[in-house]
Length: 574
Image (tube, rainbow, N blue to C red; front, side, top):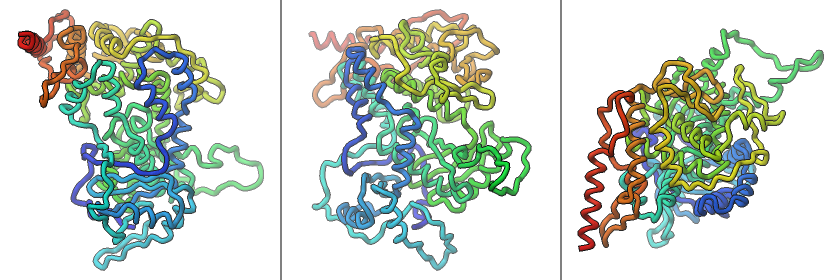
């Protein structure tokens, strides 16, 4: 075992391109197979089949429990790039059966190995040695990040050929535009974009393993604690390369919520008084942050940001390439994650539309990874959900309706906020709506190109426009903390750009010249069309106030693009 010293000079980032391939027993889970199969169906052609698949989906907590169990039986191993795969497996199999393993590259070669049972993992760890280095004082902290050396290299002639290597980050936008331009329909373009951007099975396993490795550190203080991923890593809307948000959960510690007995035993605590629960959270994260900084293998650039609205510890986990944020006492965020997961599972069009709108927004600078006045991905997601609630008939239910369907076990009140909604998919009955993804995308842009942002607020709890409770360019009600505006940071300029781009995209999707597949000539890249056209750079800028602006024709860029397409067609006919 070692601290990841060989990677000290290169700090991992979410933009680092990593290659990944997988080997192991069996295929992906049955649930993922069902989803993958459904993505290739025509939306609305088989409502009964959709209902059956939806009712068979696991809850978020069920998925998390399964992933956590896999992670607890797994190790992360640094190995040579030419490690002989057969020798590697033979060596590890001496300790127990292996369920799954895969290799990936992130400033070096790594392998994630899941044993069939805990005994195999314990046997492997017992054999691992702590290195002795003469010029360094080593801290004998034992973790499941291992380094494998001198096992033997594979000859180039013996290497298996044709292995599928997938990127751990999204492909460049120009490459995505070319790929989408080869599709035969806008429907296929949208599903292809989702397939390229969404988290893979392997990436999801790696995220849960990193959480499990961090839990090993926190467990020194809280033996029964858990660290769970939340947000984009598990809500179904995360794209490859997104940050890893983690939540230190102490609620599951046995005896914490038990009543004090009149007689018998209870734990003895040296109580340290704190002014508030926030102060307790800050103290917890301060201690855990120090441990991660001093003893966490591969954890670098640790920052304790304790005075933020939600205190956190931020660091880079070099072996995985993830940028990580660790929080505690963030239960509302966990409920938001669960809610988004539920909406994404209700209808596959939800995730497709969210991925497409997010990609479109990032391509035009509507969203940004840098904090500022931009619209956030969460705000965009809520806007998509609200639009789908406003369809006739609605595609997804309102949060109030989900609350009305909830049973006693679903009741949840966090810091005075009603976070209750149904968790049983079988209780949710949806009306039949067979609108295509192409129609929904076009209607989304039309909907927000004409939305009364100056007067109305967006609320997925009610599923209808409400009068603005405060003066802000964009008001999107927090689903659970209803007094908060999740888009309070957005200024007039950024909202105007969003509206103008919606107008432009809506107009563009209605034009036959850019809405028809255009195959390229032999050896040449295909001409962008449909969704691919929407991702190209725009000339929307210098927009004045919305009150003075009416629906305008497309920008000069679109005009020139259409003229070019017409000239090309005339040339082909001649």
